[in-house]
Length: 77
Image: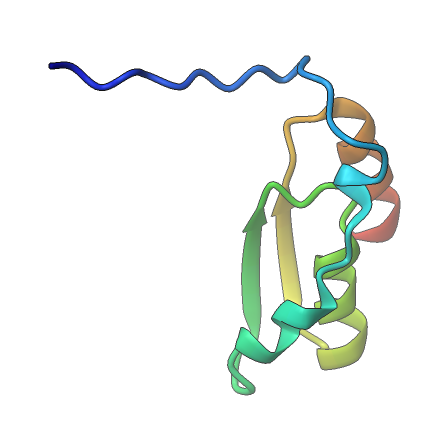
């Protein structure tokens, strides 16, 4: 029997605030000697911004949700 394929729908409804979660609880999993990260699905860029400001880490971020990507671009250079 073949497994069902899940297709990502960018237009699907997400709960309010879905793209704006900073996920500060995940900071402890980033090694102290880390100098660069890439975050796929960065939402509005809050987690990458935390890495940049609190740990001086070079951050690269990718987001397919247009409005969230635009907000992230204002926070991350």
